[in-house]
Image: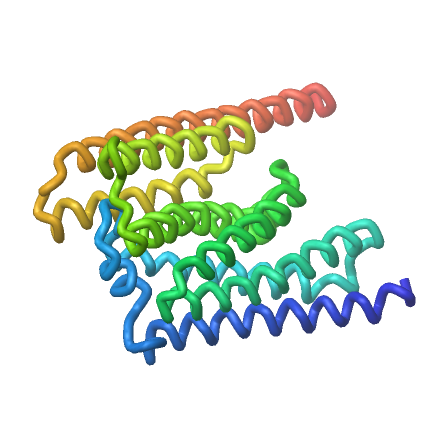
Amino acid sequence: MRRRKPAIHLVQVASVFSLTLMLTMNALSTTVPLNGRTAGQISNRFKNLMVPDGMIFSIWAVVYTLLLLYVIYIQMRLHRSPPEAQKTATRQGWLFALSGVLNSAWILSWHYYQLRLSMGIILALLVILVMIYADIPGDLPGHERWLKRLPFSIYTAWISFCLTVNAAALLSGLGWHGGALGEVFWVLLLFGGLTALGWLMLIRQRDIGFALTLGWGILGILMNHLFLLKSAHPTVIKGAAAALAILTIGIIWTFGQLFWSQLRKRMGKTIISRENHPQ
């Protein structure tokens, strides 16, 4: 235990620094803002059919709040955890610290129109987040599920969505608008990919937060087409609506499964209690 203390303190400092850096860069990007434009305004500059409504970027407030709770609950409690839990949390802490640096670098590159660089950074960020997400069990009890898994469910899903927006902006900036198949085809294909990813996480991980976040991103694209583009691309609108409907079905189905599972557990405990303590 004594040998681990310096490493624990170091990862705690790194986690706090990383989160502080992310919060600072996000604040600068919205209040100053960096390079005179918000993230939504930059997204709108590169005209393509994957541009979401600017309001959906408000989800960053949710992401950073959950990450703050994660750092406080997990990283600040490291020294009180058992050795095996310390080892896992320390590994996750270093990955989290790296993700914060990448997140901040991505914000800078995006605001200064370095689209190729931002694409490479967001890919690296997504890889790090997937590593953290995969390292957190999906069957955690109660509050641990909310404080350990949910932050990275939403964060990983949101960066997955941002990757598609970043890629669309990069291709648009390079002058590519769908080639022979047309831009609408590729947008519908991306909707299909995001929907499939959401369903995959619902089936394998029962991760409602992940699917909800992807749905939020698709909703932003739908809103942009309905209100800003004045329904100029009805096929895209239908595709977005279909993707949202399919994700909603999956979320309701998964919620029902979780509810039924919890009900069966409670009924089982009640039966066992009655058998052990007959009247």
